[in-house]
Length: 347
Image 1 (cartoon, rainbow, N blue to C red):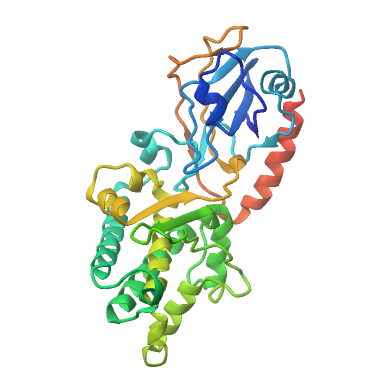
Image 2: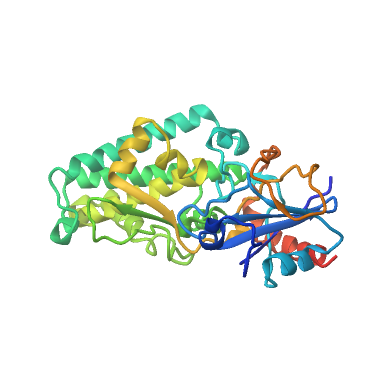
């Protein structure tokens, strides 16, 4: 089966007939050519990097994809997409999946496992809410520690470890793993991109709990996890490590692991109790995400003609195919994909 890869680029212009918001709100675009038809989909460069696949630009043309992009969008700096169009990695959410109703099917999510994960995260958020009744989340309050903050730190870190173990099983890894092994999940899960902010502190920055995670010092390089290990094994000497800020950072890490598997929309936009409590306490967004790692939906373009058009009525988004993640070999796959796509776009 032939696999088509898209390219990502920053539009320098859009066709004159485009709606005004297309000229101001969308910062990057995907394009691909299949069966003689060129397709382009615009995307936002912030929050969840949303796409609008329901209204793609399309044109049946003899131009190469590279020349079509140059002519229509004035762009020449093209970056090959890692995943082929219409494909997603099992249990790894990336921007590009815009339909929450089909998210579970696309990512091959186990509903019982998802329900258990929602319950576990809800309990963590309830504990955060309880602590905020007594602790001000700024200044010296962030350094406060108690048996309750230690309890939250331990539970949150164990939930993170459960997420790590789940992905290691999915990748076919052996048992008895160390933190240095789990560090290998950071790149294929894009953990460093996720930021979480506690809403009750209006002046706080986003916490990026996995930013700076290093393999050589896989425990010490993420402070909340280092504190967890110290206070877990020796509370007498390291009780102070279980501070409120460390427990919040650990909860943020648990939120990230949940979002990686089930998508942040399940926290931000659902109508259940978990979503309500999450929106009361936290917000989440992506930082410095790479659009070439996103998923690109495949559009059924059988009705496309030779004139360039923006079809607001087009709803023919084809089903997304799910493939098992080759977590240990993703870097090699990225290199291989980029070489093949560079050959394709010039033809």
